[in-house]
Length: 318
Image (cartoon, rainbow, N blue to C red; front, side):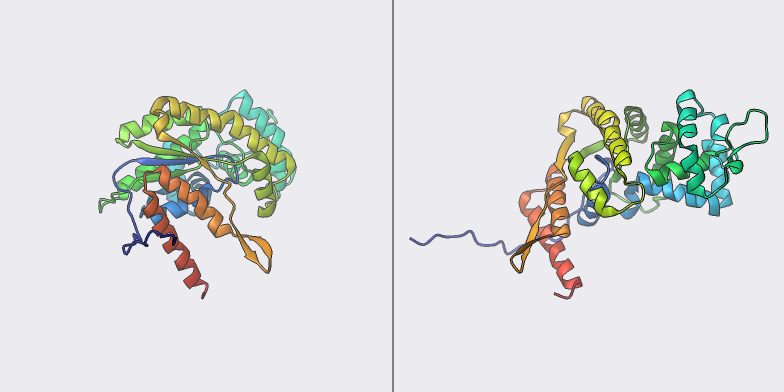
């Protein structure tokens, strides 16, 4: 008896749009692929690129603009009390914990900036190291260290306010927050800010990988600061801070707003009898899970990912 197969649909969905105000949060440990998944979601559900806010990119842009744009530097100083002229030991963020942290990393700060120790020692009798707020922001961003909560809260709020104010054409798509919030305090601040702006949290996509997988990915990335101690600190930070922040969001928003996404879904091709890892298909597997978590039907997920794969093949000439 012949077996019948379901005929392929004559209609294929190539593009969809996630519309309406709101925020999708992507969170997870270091090296879990938040940036790749966020970029794919923007492409596949037609989210305007100005609505993709990466905490890492915001920090890097802030540092660059503070050096190259005097008006932006004044804005940081006047509105957000963040300045290259203010010593990290003598600012509104100063506390015992921060002071000890800066002192502990001072040799690394000196090495990072290529400055002699005398550059960091003030002439006053206190003998405190002269590391400015912007110095510390730049160092922490480069090394993947946590910066004061106030800084992240102010900068993410400022970026969202800027995007909303610049929206003169009525962009009808949600924000994607990539890598924020990372602490309970940041989650509390974010929910308060979003409520004031009338922006609901549509979904929290919690990307999950094991400690071993995080280390393996970091090893392939080849960053200078991806040593064993740094990786342990990052994973410990995830366990001690990011996971509790997700638990807080679950309590405040309800369990249906949180989706745990397996961010390790490897795909392989067979080449000359050998299994060869396929990065693009592996990312697509994770994106597929994220799309379904956002409520996209399976048949549409299949169609738009098949279209994405075809575009890659055409771009590669095959």
